[in-house]
Image (cartoon, rainbow, N blue to C red; front, side, top):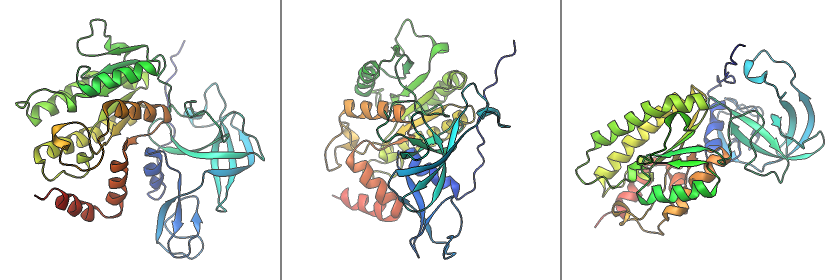
Length: 350
């Protein structure tokens, strides 16, 4: 019997359509909107369909829509859509007036009101999915490998003894993980690992651990587990810090470490996406560590960070901003990177 080859859905997208990835990564639903005439666009394009302006931005939109028509795909020239379960597609009318192409989950029919979301297909492309309004968010999507329930998974923590590792162990076990292994686990089996949680960027490895040593440790872990995750269509989680996106001026060494960790995560994500696996990254603003003590505002607890990571895995998100400060900084970073840089510099001034 011939072994079935795992096929990725088509990944090519126009530059305009790539704008769906940002909202999808954080669980938002946004559509292109013209800044000049306020007309909402779909599909994504370079110029406004009404006034031909190029001033198109992505704005969050309500998720409600109406199913106009549906169809079931029994045969497709794309191998990814030729599985045992025939996917259902639909035309749905959004309240803004545009009609979208969406994949339908169970329980949705023509005439129904549905809840729209962006989901990642294997390989990292984004599609629109239509669910019943009260759908269980942990339910797997109709044509993607994500989100994926954590129940029954074999997990490996790169450091299970530090505070984050201990919190992740509890969160994963509470979510139903079959095994949560660490470096000291005598029964750990690399060939069965489906989820790797990289917690050792917060490991208490001592002041003498150089950035180069941390990078080499990550690269060794990536070479060890990336082929396994690709084979099992698994996931890698990188617990980083907002310093990976915008430096903490009074912590140059720590900020450089997190910037390097971000570069490594982006490179590993590209590798995993090409093989049908995925990577989730978290960017908390303030944790209970020495490098964050000068930051104002409330401190995110380790269990809260671990729960945010588990929730992101179940909901199919790529980027996690688990506290109010990180979400505020993300908004400012998106609007004006230089303004946030100067704001953080002034807040760290003596």
